[in-house]
Structures are given as structure tokens and as C-alpha cells.
Image 1: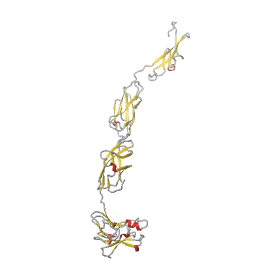
Image 2: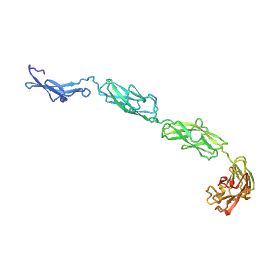
Image 3: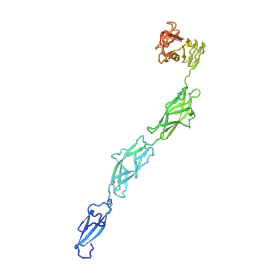
Image 4: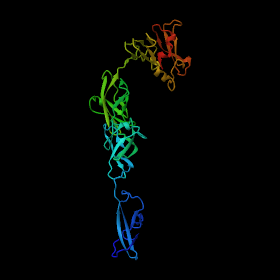
Length: 415
């Protein structure tokens, strides 16, 4: 204390008043000012107090003081580690930056190094590298192969103190381009009806669960696009195809996913050449109708006709009991057939819906010469109720090596 009187003694105390904000943080012992608790620069860098000096006569003087805390070069361990991002798009290039690191540390101005370390959550450390404060992925990621990675990171300050934390890096599922189109069938029989389905489209795409639309587009191989239509995922031919007119078609198809990404491919649609049957029809008179080396459909119609089957698979068609009693010559079991569909439908109320009109009593086969296997009669139940008394002869049949048992088989007929 400065005092005009020499030899005075003084006592000191902390008093309220201007600048006494932090009085409670200090104590006075004799003429010493003491701080009650260890100070921390990072927590509080200065204190304000007010002190009174009192002489032995009770006279006093007060003054405020500011006590500053010196910032020493102390080192405290980091307390947290952060990544600027924890996800990355699939298909980015190898060595792409995932994120940048930052560290929380009580010490101002510290510098840090980062490393991948073993421990909880370090399963996928080998898939990443650290360059400076950047985390990089070593290879291009693919969501469909692996959708997330687990890593463990350490931050170390310049004094060697460290902090570790696990992180999960997620891969963002990006819409990818379709890679292929397939057609379930690339051929169709000639003579099918207009708008018949050729086949169904399907798409190969890296993304699971995508939906696709299909369209015919101009480009390489689109020559015959106009001959087809697409309904949903079905390819349909607009008109009945004929092998002899055009045996194949070229089209170009595009598949588009729900995100608008596309893939195109040309296709060749082939027309199958069928063994088409010749149509041989009789007249209202008695005719001689000869089959060919091809497959024939032979219909005698009115009067008694001589029908000579050919080398192919022939169908002899009857539509009415009034067609006359024909003679079928050279009938070949296993190749030729007697077609009775329309005839049976015309005499049976509601039509015939069975599979074996012989067993059902509407058709019978008998030998005209008793036990001699030479000529046979095919008879029809004229009243359509399966009564054997009403059978009427429809046609007689002869053929090489023909027997009653061989002819009396539903496989020789079409009911």
C-alpha cells in the first residue's frame, strides 16, 4: 500500500464494488492474493476483483484489478472426430473422395493426422485410404454388391494424444442403364391370326425392382417395325404371316426404365414354314378325288365319291349325313383321319363335347364281308342319341393291311 504516513500497517480484503465480478474465485492470506481453484485458459482467460487496503487507524482505499491467466503450451487429448459426409454414390471412380476429417480438441491450434485402425467397426478398413484429411474409397463401389462399409478411424494430435471412432459409409443407389433385352421367342408359325403374340420382352438391369416400357424405334435393324405392335411387354404381329411371302422380319426395340434410362437392340423374327394342307373339294356330283404327295384336306360333299388318299397325311371331312356314301381307298392307319366334327355337331343336340364318339355310341366301324378284312363301313348314329338301331352308313373304307381292329380306333378319327 502507498500511504503518506510512514510506518503504517495494512490489512487487505476483497470487497464488493466496481470490478468485483470474480471476487469469489480468490482469497487473501496476509498480504497474499490466492486463487481458489486451478485456472484453465481455455475456460476463463481473465478475472476481475476489487480489493480494499485498511490502515491501523481504519482508513481505507479500494481498487479494481484484472487477473489474467497465461495460456501455457499444454496438450489435451482430442474429444471427437467428424466426417464431412458418410455416403457416396455407387459407380464413382476408384480413389474418389468420400469426405474430409475434422477434429474437436480443447487445445486451440492443434494439428492432426488421421489413420484407419483395427478395433470395433473396422471390418472394411481395407476398402479405404486416407490422404491428408481426406477419406478415399479404393475401388468404384456398387450398391447391388455392397451397400455399406464399416471403418474405424483415429485422429492424433501433434503431441501424440488420440481419439478413435467407428463410422458407417453408405453407398447411394443410383439408377443404372439397362444392359440387355431378351425376347422369349423369336419365331412364329405362318398363318397364325393377326395380332398374335410372338413373345414377351424382359430386361437385364443392374438395379433390382426396376420397371420397364418397351417400344419399336428407328435405327439399325428397324426395317420391319411397321409389321409389329407392342402391348405391355408383348410383341405382336399385326397381320397373319406367310412364310412363302416373307420368311423373316427385322425390328429394333428399346427398353426404358422408370428413370428414363434406355437400351436398344435389333431382333430378327423368323416365320416357321408349316406343312400346309392342300384343299380338295368335290362337287354336287359323284367325283373321283385324288390326294397328292402333300397333306390334303378332302371333302366330297354331295353324292357318292371315290376318294383316293395320297402319300401325305390326309383328312377326309364329312359335314352332313346327306353327303352320300363315299368309298375311301388306300386309307392309311396312323397317317389319314376321318374328320366328323361338323357332322356330329349337326346331329347331336348341343353338339358333341366328348373325346371318343365310338365309345359314346355315335360312331361304329364294321366289316362288310364278315371275317374278311377287305372293306369296312363307318356308320353314324342318325338320331344323335346313341341308339345303335338308328346307325346309318356314311362311307366305306379300304386300305392296305387294314383290319377291323386297326380301323376301329379313335385315333383314326377327329371328333
